[in-house]
Amino acid sequence: MIDVRIQVAKYIGASIATVALIGSGAGVGVVFGSFLMALARNPFIREELFKYAILGFALTEAVGLLGLMMAFLILFI
Image (cartoon, rainbow, N blue to C red):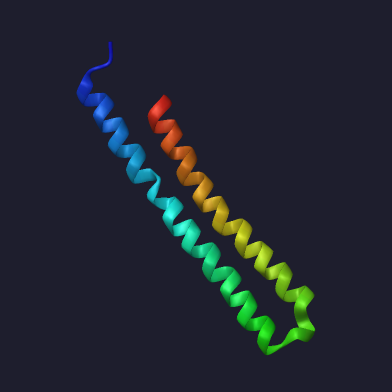
């Protein structure tokens, strides 16, 4: 049987690891907010701006998913 202190430490570690999801959500908002501002300034380069926005979105979400994966690893291993 797992000691209660170890279980509590796992829950605390997993909750700290999920802080990355907060930063990921804020990062996605910044990426698409910047995309809309750049699009309003220069609508003729929409395709190029959209490619950069999707790349920024993917990289930002990758950080959030890594944090979530770490939380699950802490809980279940």
